[in-house]
Length: 193
Ligand SMILES: [Fe+2]
Image (cartoon, rainbow, N blue to C red; front, side, top):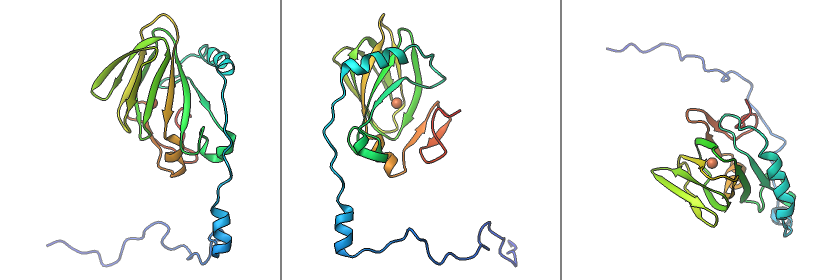
């Protein structure tokens, strides 16, 4: 017969004083809430290739750090903390030098890739996609993926993700490199070590 402990084991934090009020817990009437709920306008925005290209060329001089990538993220400041081109959408340009291999990783944001320069291949889940300029492929959430530039010029991928939506829900997760998990909350970022 299993013996039952007479006293419950202490659990850390259970003896702290109960919280009565939190200042940030607000109550609003209809008149207050609906105007509060209306989000400010997100202004249309344009990012010029003429501005992006020299920045990408500068980024391409950096050595790849471990599983790091070279991304130029396009951000509309009107999206505030969401940090997207639109509140729920990330758009970035990734540059991969000839012969480089972006090692396998995954995230719970989806990724759509459109090749605007160069050639190579990507392993996405069980598939190998060979690509060149004009091709598009999709990487579903949490699918392992890696990229290789097999050409002679830098490859540039135009990448769309739902990262801002995931991040705003505080459920954006990464595994990069394999075996190293990141939950994208304050104080825990990929590429931070
Ligand atoms: Fe990725």
